[in-house]
Length: 437
Ligand SMILES: O=C(O)C1=C[C@@H](OP(=O)(O)O)[C@@H](O)[C@H](O)C1
Ligand SMILES: C=C(OP(=O)(O)O)C(=O)O
Image (cartoon, rainbow, N blue to C red):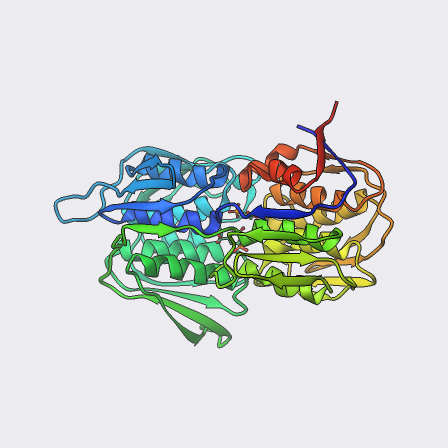
């Protein structure tokens, strides 16, 4: 589906959709606990639905309720261990989180399963998580080809991972750890990029009674590292009800639109104390010169004197598209650094962010680990290929509001990966969006 956006500032108030990062984790923990859990989650998305369908395939019972999901955990064997369905096909869709969380979990459950996916997912890396799983008792079919078949059973012990490929490997191992029956140590070399996502996992586990210890350590080679430890014995204990917070990664697009507009945009439902690292959008937009106004019910962003800056995004890779939209019109040069892993997302996001800025008349260039963006106030509009990447479609829509002519977004339906109602909310904020005729 191609959508056309006509120029015009967004303004008003919008509610953040439910966080898919929180939802994945809380749904998985709920499925692994013996009892029933109500996961309050007002909105869903293709990625959240992928995790739900995989958990159902493993034997959990998940029902959609008015407030979210009611999850009945996996059946248990005589010794009280979760007993997964065997021979299940786990369709991860295009969700990297679903695949990288449920691969170690399925292995630790001793499930003979096949994990499959689409879009860019089969190309996105699993190494060296894959090798770590094999070294700890898992039998996996060849890497790089889907479906990926699992067998054997993941055992406890020490896992070593680099900090610069994907924090999702660490999160997956920590969620699998309580199922191994022994102590699990995950040593991650510094810098641990996307570190707040590991914190989000620790937060979710803690809500289900699993505590993760963390401290400084060194690798065998003597380099600095972080050690994450889940001690045995432990198991998932449902707290009854858990709440999924508003999604800061997606709220970031509305705040960016506020910075690009006139009267500002306010977002409700996103907690400024959230464990989500992407609430850093507030600091990053303020650094670029936008005006942030917090009230009890909302946080708003309005334009001021936008100026280019150095933005280190090691801990918040998903904020690059909305920040790039603001940098594209800020005075001067923005250097986005610490962003090499963006090449491993739904698209090569360094290439697609820069292509989107340039397609609308801006000036962006890819560097070794990020982007250089020269701001301009003269964006003409044009045609952006969303490249099947939800964050590129949302970025293009937001930046289109500041162009002098119309913008066509090719493949705009990919927003459904994380935010199916994005364009409805865009229109609610006064955005002029129509289907290409
Ligand atoms: O754990 C998570 O929920 C996520 C971790 C990040 O990935 P990496 O750790 O691979 O950077 C982020 O980009 C992704 O959208 C969601
Ligand atoms: C990279 C993303 O998600 P995932 O890795 O779960 O596919 C994203 O939502 O931007």
